[in-house]
Image (cartoon, rainbow, N blue to C red; front, side, top):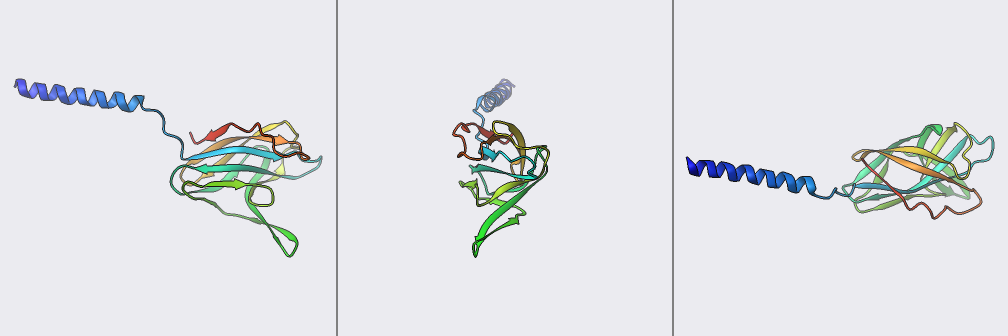
Length: 163
């Protein structure tokens, strides 16, 4: 009987130690991080805009499958390519994010197209963009609007992570 009680006590103690260790472990880094989200200011009357950013994948392969924002009636994944001197823009259903990859959405390439802007994008303003990933789920991103005549500001050092 004493031996059984000791075993039971040891089992309970081991469970408590494991719970404390798990509870105090540092949070794992999110698999998907979104960095440096920016958009160029738009001229008065512009109906569309674009968002550029970097997606860093620290986990398994994932896919960016949608985007939304209150700054526009629609947000779509697009890619641009030049063929015979003509720039063509095409809708993309999903964007593959390979393991250990950094995918950059940049001018002249893949971007989030803002269709039907709610209002002009003005330099210095910020708006929220929500990105939907197949595995990582929703990631909320703060987008900084920059002066269209200048390069992206270097002050985009903050990161956005999946919750």
